[in-house]
Each structure stands twice: as C-alpha cells, then as structure tokens.
Image 1 (cartoon, rainbow, N blue to C red):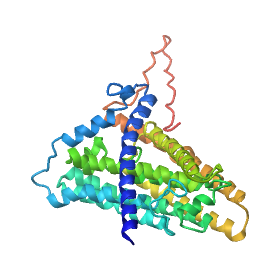
Image 2 (cartoon, rainbow, N blue to C red):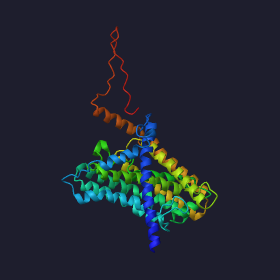
Image 3 (cartoon, rainbow, N blue to C red):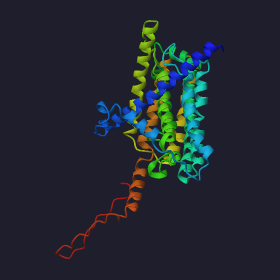
Image 4 (cartoon, one colour):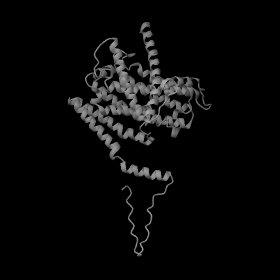
Length: 398
C-alpha cells in the first residue's frame, strides 16, 4: 500500500466514523419521535424545532457527566469493555457498501467478514459484566452470552441462504443479482429469520433480556456512566443501523432494485439516497416492534431460538438447496418459503400452548395477587322445602 492509498483509506475511515456518529444522533431523535407517535405523545419538542437539537444536548450532557468507576471493579477490564463492544460495530462497516462505488473496501468474502467481526461484540458485554464486579451486571453478561450464541445460529444460516442464491459472498455482487427481483420475494422466510435473529443480537425489545431494567437493573451497563455508557449506546445504535442496512442489501435489492438507470456521480448520489430511504424504513419497523411487543422471559427467549428459529433456519437451507439442485425455479422457493412461514406463525400464535398457557397465566396471576378463586353463591332454598338444585361447575379449561 502506497502512502497515497493509506491517506485515502484514512480519510475514508474518518468520514465513515463521522457519518455513523451523525446517524446515531438522528436515530436517537427518530426513535423518540416514533415511540411517542405510537403512544400518542409528542416526544422531544423543547430543544430546537420539534426537538431536533435534543441529540446534541444529550451528547453535551454525557460528555460532561461525571464518569464513576466502582472501587471494587477490575479497572482494566471495566475500561476496555466499551471499546471491545464499539470496535466491532465500526469495523464491520469496512466492507458494507452504500452504493456501487461507495464502500471503503469491497471484499470477495465480505459476508464472511461481516459475520466474523460482528460475533466479537459479545466479548464487550462479558467484559462489562465481569469488570463491574456486580451481581446484576454479571447476570446480564451471562444472559447476553446465552442469547447471542443461540441467535447467532439462525442469523448465520439466514445469511448462508442468501449466499446460496447468489453463489457468492461478495455483497456488491449479491446486490447486482437483485437488479430484476429482490430476494425478499424469493426467500421471505430468510428475511424473517435474519431480522428476528438480528434484533435478538442487538438486544432490543422484545429481546432486551440481558439489560432488563425490571430484573437486572440495566444488565452489563449498570455500573457505567458518562462517556463510557455513551460508548455502549453508540455501539447499540450503530449495530441497529448495520442490521437495517444488511436487510436492505441482502433482501431488498440494496440500491439496485427497482433498477435506477444512469451512471457517474449523480447516479451514485441517487443510489445512496435510495439505499438510505429503504434503510430508514427498516429502522422504523424496528422501532415499531419495540413500541408494540412486550419483552420475552428468558425461558421464552431461549425456547424461541432453539425450538422455532433454528429448525426454520435449517428448513430454509434445505428448501433453497433442493430448488437450486433440481433447478425448479425461484417461484417454487417463494411458495415453499411462504408455506413454511405460515406454518411457523400458526404454531407460534395458534395451536401451540394456547389453552394451557392461558390457564397457567390465570392460576399464577391469581396466586401472585393473593386472590381467592371465584365461588359460586348458594341459591336460597325454595319455600316448599324441596332440595336446592346446584349447577355443576364447568371443568377447568372449558
């Protein structure tokens, strides 16, 4: 590498860091506004027009806030944990393109690089939990390890399904292969697996089990404040933007679908705008999921990964392999994928545990609230002295 190339990559990395930092500020404002609209509130309104300067105020507050380190913490691990979580979030953007010629370094094994680097983020959560020397932080770190390892399997298998369709792990080539038809039409099951597993790896609602405030008081981040806590939040929002961008690149055609004619700088600019527009629509869907679904319990979280997503991921790989091997046509894969997805939704929301779970919730809620089961009142005896006719109580679950 020459000195000129080194300077070019250095400037590109600095520009990418500035872009991602600005994106995080926009996402914090957008999430507050989106959740406020869902909950019939106004959201930030005081700092700037419609609260647009609120992220700048938040940055100023976090940078000037006292950064406290517990005296009993392992200080080296405690201080390195935010960097261990933030660095993979930044490094993964080395090979993620936002337009045909707008990428820091396009790699032939770009998907492999993305998966390999993103897995390293779990180390930061473990270091934060261990270095804090706090039982709640440690419990949150262990929860994060279990959840990320479990959901990494369907996440990787969903990416593998896309690589099988494109016969490549080059992200730019995958986008080019979608110039006529996007992979969301061919493989809707793969999109479902990728998005759900990605949300679980982000630790966002309804999968925010490792920093659940009602149970572990903030999880691995409970002892952090100031700039160190801001680094964790910066990594979380960068990863959110990363997952949304990968959804667009792998399943929504990136900047190529629908096809945009033209060439040169104007085409690159329009491609970037089109890519960001689709990415922000996916991000709004992620915010909508957070404002709609309640958090899962830890047992529900793990059961959903191993009993639902992992089998569906192997079904997705099997169907994709059969269609490609026998050259059946992509419309066959679309139908099979939709049928598998419909069967999964039927199992999740239909038959599986419906009556039994309702009865269990009813029994446990009655016990927790200290209520007594409802007793049918005795009927008054008839005036002629005949025996009282008492209706039998319905069977449990009727």
